[in-house]
Image 1 (cartoon, rainbow, N blue to C red):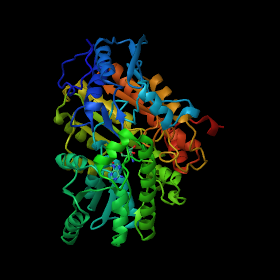
Image 2: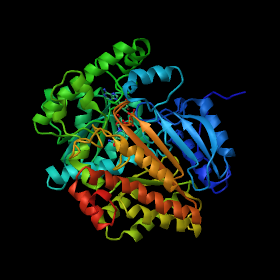
Image 3: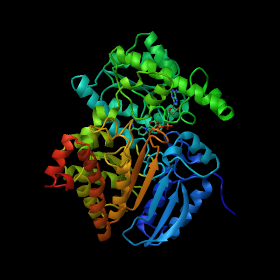
Image 4: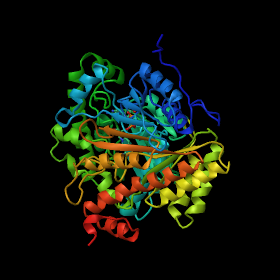
Length: 554
Ligand code: NAD
């Protein structure tokens, strides 16, 4: 009989295989790790993070994937269509063991309406970014990016330091939950507004957030005391952002930095409308989805109006990749895009060098393996002061969730060097089991997302979706362990096309070849994409690093 109940999932640890090889075992452990209760937001529904971002379509599909991975041979490839295993085909040993496609729809049909219809029929699943591509690592996955974004805002607007400053944001979910820690790591105080007390409690338990408050008065009291004493602390306020921000305006409290990470990309199953309790909202969502969506869109309009008003009063305000501005624009807020996006504002120069959230996971489950790789990173890049500071902070402040993992922004050249060196550590037994190496889809070359990664490209190519497809193709050709193509991550169905890749360092010669190729092709497409768009930093970087670009060769 097929098991369809929700079991508690946790990846196996140690160096004993349950599959026929480490490439398959890695995929199995990472799928399971995505659903570990320490890692996933709602594992019983297979939801990992980001509204309804799932790891498998349903429990029946999950168990079928597990069975398929356990029997998969070293020359076979498993195909996953929106979280459901649909076939196993003979390929070859250096080919990916798994290829995944999540939530892709033909352009004209690519909206939430069609998606939800197909989802209701059991034909599709929303894969978000790293949920359906099996490389989510909990809130740590975004901590460094958020930390660097806040730090850059500090350099740009506050003379290099956020000490004593107040950052305000909405959303303390899977990704948003990284904000309080990223803020206090920068020396700032943080007020996070989330409508769901349970989400805030989860951040208290993981050490990412310091306090929970149930009224704005209570939250402000804690924050004022901390600021007076020069302390950097974070408070999660249980409230609706569309109510709490207008209240800040009424009291003339202007944050130094203002952003948002509520699940605005999904007006039905993500964002929660204001003017009602969470329980009432959940009932409305169930019983009257159209009315819920209408109220949710109106609330996002009110939310952005308040952000614009605070921006006008001096708050450094930016959109943090959840498509809130677009929803507000649809709801009638004409000036919604006066709020800049965080990528053109702070991140694009890094993308020009293929830099982005590179990450790795110790399949052994042993934190010592990650500490060994931390030392390796410092040995390999001694000149990188930012990396040294980050590794030090991460070791002190990041609690591992599920399998121990690390994130570090590295670029073209650095990634291949580091991946190959990790493979050597595995080969020499200095790490007790293989290491999985991947990245977020918040990335230089693997994303087309006009309100996020590719907003305001210099040549106007924001909506060109050829790049992520080329990225997936070349990473497949180069021999990644698994490769995925997705629609809608971060900003919602129809608003983005993106690709993921994971490659396993199992200490073998074949892994060394695959790592060198994939960890070059993958950030390489990031550099190419930005050269093609005419970014001067990318052109200079490509020339300095001998990256071949036919249109620039005489
Ligand atoms: P999540 O679904 O785990 O959490 C969203 C949180 O928002 C929940 O805790 C929910 O209770 C809260 N919320 C919803 N409506 C609210 C409201 N009106 N007021 C206050 N709280 C409200 O999602 P996540 O993984 O944290 O991602 C958040 C958003 O950021 C998503 O839209 C996601 O696509 C996007 N995202 C951005 C990045 C980035 O790099 N900037 C990366 C990943 C995801």
